[in-house]
Amino acid sequence: MNYFKEILQYARPYRRYGVLNIICNIFYALFGTLSFVALVPVMKVLFQTTEDEYVKPEWQGITQAKDYLEDYVNWYVTDVMNEDQEMALVMMIGLVLILFLLKNLFGYLGMYFITFLRNGVMRDIRNALYHKIVNLPISYFSEKRKGDVIARATSDAQEVQTSFLSILELIVKEPLNILFALAAMLIFSVKLTIFVLVFIPVSGFIISLIGKRLKKQSDKVQREQGFFLSLLEETLGGLKVIKGFNAERRMEDTFQDSTQRYYNFANKLELRKGLASPVSEFLGILVIGTLLWFGGTMVFEGNIDGAIFISFMGLAYGILTPAKAISKASYGVKQGNAAAERVLQILHTENHIKDKDNAVEVSAFAKAVQFNNLSFAYEDEEVLKDFSLEIPKGSTVALVGQSGSGKSTIANLVTRFYDVSKGSISIDGHDIKDVSLKSLRNQMALVTQDSILFNDTVAVNVALSNKNATDEEVIEALKIANAWEFVSQLPQGIHTNIGDSGNKLSGGQKQRLSIARAVLKNAPILILDEATSALDTESERLVQEALENVMKNRTSIVIAHRLSTIQKADKIVVMSKGKIVEQGTHEELIALQGIYNNLVNMQSLA
Image (cartoon, rainbow, N blue to C red; front, top):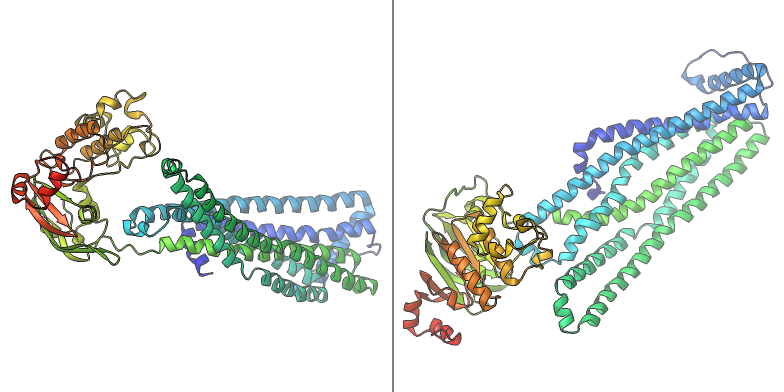
């Protein structure tokens, strides 16, 4: 129930709907009970059990309430029956119909108000999840399956709504039904009421035994769902590779193994849940049957009026229905508990990369970016060791070296996607850990090797950093990035949808859109992480021209695989195994006849 309490924190903004729901449920339970009580005079009219003459009773206080109500009903019914028996029956039936109408009206109103609460809470939980996902550090997702995260934000969140939040209504509505019904039953017969109350806890205990392992089974189902959703996401992203290597059968086998496990877990869960209904139904009928026998003997002995006993039976059945609903709801709590735990695991994940109190705001980059004795490790693998470098404003520094030498790690650290293990990075003399993340990243524009585009229009992708950018600003950025030539030929120009991950465009076109996005941001520091390494010669030439346009009057950190693209850099830093082994201009490094010269010769650039 701890998870339930945490989920309820999201209900605070909607408490007015909760209050209105409770008020409606009070009237629902009241009129539900009165509708069964009103059957008493109907029965009396039908069976003509009121042949004696009655006088209108006087109120003698709450202690005589039962006798007063019974005498009043007898008096009213006989008074009307003496005039017109059929009219008496119509009036009593009309009363019952009105009470049932009011009961159902307030039942609907209760559902109406709780709907806003449930859906509002669900919306806020999903928003909180998305906010958490986009703010968690990159390192969190390198250890998680994407499909599992998606499952938690979708199916698990939905399970919280259907299994958990439905309890909000049950914990008020059904107990009130039981409470009002018990009050009426006690007025009718204390002895019969005690008899019913003995059976209900026994039934509840038996049903609770069935649901003991539901949380564990539900957790397995949800975890397996996360696994095959992740597999599906990977399949959609890697269809070319799967088909190219004839791996369809292998991937199908892996997916079918997962869905078979899901099938087994889901069967166990549903069978256990399904057992609740027949068991509770049988126990309910058992109670009713026993009550018929016990109450019937009381009618025969004259200890209770037959009409009252029939109404009592209706009230007893009215208690069993909400009692069964509460017992079934306990299954929902267990199932929702597992889903809520998985949702809250994300919401409770601590974000280690966040702003300090009183973080510094860097409004405009003015001097230099400095790396001071930097060391960094992904878990136990150290990728940078005592790395020191200064990048003055307006200069272009290129990082080169073999794969795994730590080049891309520099880009991840300067943007604070990861935090350094040892040493520091400073911008204009401020340690970036002391600078607010927003102002730090406002100083930087990033172009990666993989062109990350979204399933939206060209304009939306280019203006990612500024949703208020005008069409003219977007077009100007596209021109600088050598992208306007092909964008202008698209069916709807900048308002053309480019498909999932920009799959309607070529690799060079996608990369030029990424560069246009960096242009529009107009950040003083440009980070190019192997921006041309995946392109053909013609596309590389166009992209390189675009990059040179963008790099003018900017501080640039260029991570390069193709050395032809960085010969004009102010400084080239050669890295090996996380350390700087050479640095200087292209000409200086060639003259050294060292590692850089060997790399150039291998690429046939000498």
